[in-house]
Length: 257
Image (tube, rainbow, N blue to C red; front, side, top):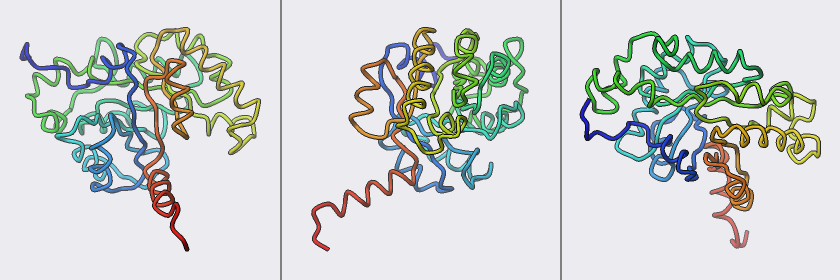
């Protein structure tokens, strides 16, 4: 590996420096949409959990971030190593694992993104080096350190076990998923419900106490600023579709109709 080459993934250093980073979740299978978003965002999560995106399109969306400061991440449908493997080999520099509710879940996620002996990732990054314009040898030399293991705390059981989860070595960032957290206690869509807010606060406290970087969703500038004050370093500003909705709505402000 060249001694002068910086790490492929700039997010980890930013988080260590307590520098807030901003991103969004891409659910629309569109190269053009990602390219536009990548001009402004620090990271984009390509959503393979809920959106209509297949691996071929995900590869194209990851490639669409090339030449920008934006770091491509991928959210998989379940905490399974075989689902994490292909996105990493296609050039993603991190995997967002859903529904991490125990230390066993967290350990499985960590091992999915790292090669032996640190993990169980299988070799085969045929396309990732091309995305990052490095040799296979250079990619392999820093792959374990460049890859982000992002775990999502989004179930009441996860909150109850937050300390054991956050004690798992190798988690790079933990994000709180308020939507599924509310759903797990039959409060679907009620993100401002006192019980939901209490669970979020408990999860937040456990993550911050652990020293692992914390991330979450910010529904407004005011909320984002408050989260930054509390120590958040990865803030999702919305989904691609919600950002479009907000942009269109803003375009109509003060127009007489």
